[in-house]
Length: 51
Image 1 (spheres, rainbow, N blue to C red):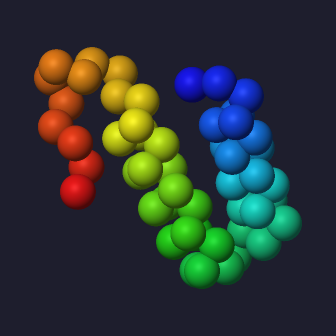
Image 2: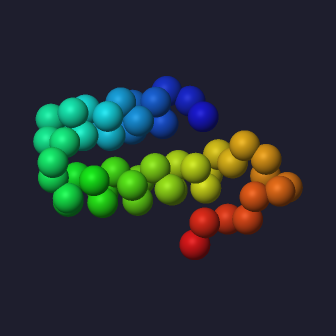
């Protein structure tokens, strides 16, 4: 993970803080977080990829 992903994470946090009640923001943030977690698993050999 490098500065590019950190900017994505900061943007996700910013989006949620700007509109914490928005279901669309929540859904979009959740999907983005799943993609990031799939790209950077804690234990690659033990955790299957998220589909």
